[in-house]
Amino acid sequence: MCSGSRTIAGAFMDGMTPLVLAVEPENIPAELQALRQWVCWRYQKNEQGKFTKVPFDPIGEHPASSIDPSTWGQFAEALRTYFLGDCDIDGIGFVLREAGDLVGIDLDHCVSDGKISTWALKIIFELESYTEFSPSGSGVRLFLKGKLPTGGRKRGSIEMYESGRYLTVTGHHYPRSPRAIEHRQDAIEALHKRVFTESSKPERSERNVRLELNDSELLKKAFAARNGIKIEALYDGSISSYPSRSEADLALCSGLAFYTSDPAQVDRLFRSSGLFRDKWDERHHGDGRTYGEGTILKAMGSEDERFDRESNRRTPASRKLVL
Image 1 (tube, rainbow, N blue to C red):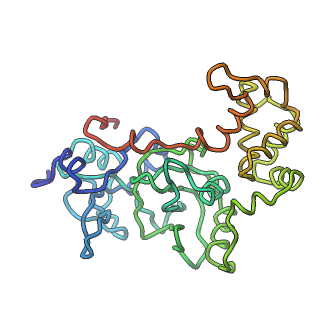
Image 2: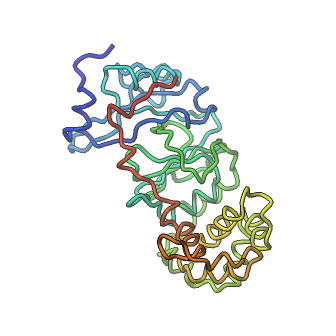
Image 3: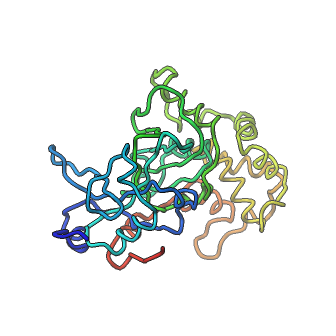
């Protein structure tokens, strides 16, 4: 197939190219896999000496174009080249085409020390569709069904596309997002309006805004959200949608923590809920925390939102063939 390519060990162990996440094909939505819109990509330096992700056809031999379907191919072709080819391919990608109904949204530079930034989490929870981490692990990407309004496509760390663009795909699914690509027309339009057409006056940080909500305002905001019915049911003491009391406790704390950075406020609100029980103040034998303290820490991202990029970077041993 390809000749003169770097070895995998050389590409990822001598600093020649940035480290990337290994593709996890089993997590990529079947709806994307079924479309003949796949390419491969590899890092190449541009004239400024910066690495860019250059698309190639599914067998890795010739450059691909986001507007030329003859340079695209089947998912299995691109995946086979990625796992078995000798073209030094760094990943696979999906091309958005005008005739489709898919929208791809990039949130760049929003993952630091394994934790997703508040502004990006807000968008992820608003859109509620398949979300995955980018090849570098420093950003996230969402796929949705719908159409973009006319107007802007890139502003700051937010990009929104529906055609003439290829997007890298890793399969590193963000576990708090759906595994399916959902139809989210209203949410797409709302985000596009907020990013590209509303006033761009400086805003206070999301953290400061959240800290200003009192308890009643926070509950009102949480109950009015897209998932507000679930949060309100938990607050009233219903655990029917959860296999255990502990999972229901964590779900309520997570719902509340989305609107505040103050663990004391989450604790105060949980104690006023129908889920509160004596176990909340029981101390764990190992770390000395109470059950409630541990649950709040997990809900606020100390554990649940972490993404260990180092352990997921691609190495020769991490490749597995799944076709």
